[in-house]
Amino acid sequence: MTMWSPPFGYLTSVKGVFIDEKTLVHAADSWIMECHVRLLSDRTADNRRRVIDKLIWFIRENNIDGVNTLVIKQFLAYISTAHKTEQGRWGHKLSSRNGTEMKPVSSETSLTYFRVLRTFFKWMETEEMIIAAPTAAVKPPISRPDQINPFSESDIRAILSSATKSNNPNRDRAIILILLDTGIRASELANMKFEDLDIIARTTYVTGKGNIRRMVAFGSATARAMWTYLKMKERAKEDPVFISDRGGFLSKDSLYTLIKRICDRAGVTRDKCGPHTFRHTFAVEFLRQGGNIFTLQQMLGHSTLSMTNHYVLLAQADIKMQARKFSPANKYAAK
Image 1 (spheres, rainbow, N blue to C red):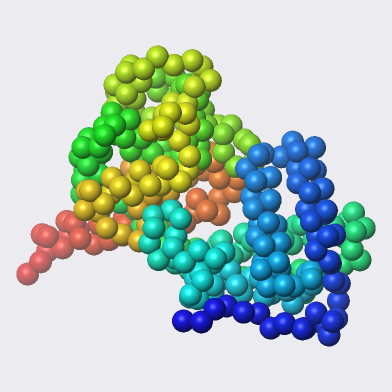
Image 2 (spheres, rainbow, N blue to C red):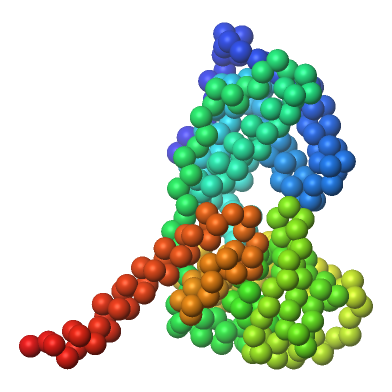
């Protein structure tokens, strides 16, 4: 495999807006500051900062003096192909999450990078820092949503059994059940505070994308598991519900690592075995059992029905398969 290397010496020959590194860094700082002025969520600000920092890293790593349309294209190409090189993406051949070989990013991740950059440069244009956004002539990456592949019933039973064999079995079983029972995101679980939780009412508040709080409900089995875990240690209102092995709030990365370890011990092998797979499983099971799509949208914290509809299609396909398999007419009319 070869190192990823962009063509050099093209900047002076390319037409269009050119933004030098100093201007780019200054504009990025101002843009992130505006996120806080507008009271956007910390997650939005952090995501924007991460993308711009990656772009700055890219131009510095490749000794490029700044950014124009072609550099943006090179950067997007790097995101989708750098995992094939000896150095790997961002200079790391191994994935920081689980120590395995780096894999290609999803089409949705590439599209997220593009959208952040497009918003940033459009903001620079509005602020009259540049005369035109260099992303205006860049076509967005084609997004191909990942196939939804929920856990099977046997997977769930094996995972629950595996959770009870960990170093912190009460916590880990409670984590598995509340992910399965509510479909909350990894960040929502990791940041859940004790004051957000009402065991008696079997509800909890979580803060999702856009810094929007919503209430989710869970069943009696999850409530019992939560109570078994929580009664082990007294908590103040601002304390985390799920405490990490080192104390304090769980991080997203540590939650992914925890779930992966539980799945490996359970013998549940698949490309994706993390909190989001529980989210998929919850959504599909909710619809299979007759749940309303609008209620599901609210529970998942989707701003539109477009993503929720992916689960509807999967659930409908499952209903058709079950109807064909267990057709009474086929049973009694068969010759």
